[in-house]
Length: 340
Ligand SMILES: [Zn+2]
Image (cartoon, rainbow, N blue to C red; front, side, top):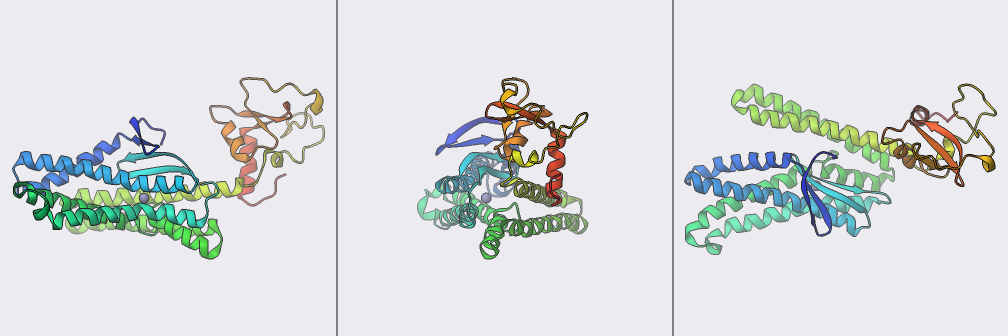
């Protein structure tokens, strides 16, 4: 998500970033709405209604994401930001200490808000004649109707039970509650997400074959969504597996069995000098981590083009670790092998 974004805003204390691709979403929606409204209105009125509709689509998408963000914050999680983009929205949050119940609530609240929006717009559409002046009642009713269906579609699509969709997170939370095994629950929701992604690509291909070139845009939308789902689900699994491997391990675990007085290409110079005589840990170029730091901190220390970090105990450098050594150690942990 570290792409260029339009200027960000804060809403209810949550940073809202607009990815430039959200303009593509708004334009596509406005184009589709213009087609809908053009049948009964002049071009000017159709364009105006379509523009209002596009803004409301983006705003209701924001309401959905804001639901996730506020529920997460209410449950003590740190919310990084909401990013609105072509595919809707993403809420980045730190899920440390999250329980299955927290995950269920945070995931379910988004589709719930979309359903509430759908119901609200549905009521506006139904009672448009009573609510709005006669000249604009039909147009506003039609706009509310389209927005109601849009939000219903958003809620239903997001409730499809495959990661990383909200429905996938709901499924994961429920399986986690039942089995008590978070990673296993995640694997099931990821497989479901990948399967749904493959089905969407197949649906895109079938649409193209059956309806021909005039349905190319719809077919492409299915295929792109499918590929996006498969990739997002796979990356979610990789990250979760990495987190599971890193959990509860510390820097000291990677250097816990130091080789005695090895010269030449020792995998770990350990310790080069007794702790008391070690060099002071003040070198600005080489980042340092404490023996007691967790492995997330160690991995973060390599960011910014560093390929070596110093291991520090009580302010003294007692050894170094290269990025390759850490990568090898983590690969061993992922394969379930003990560290050398
Ligand atoms: Zn959502």
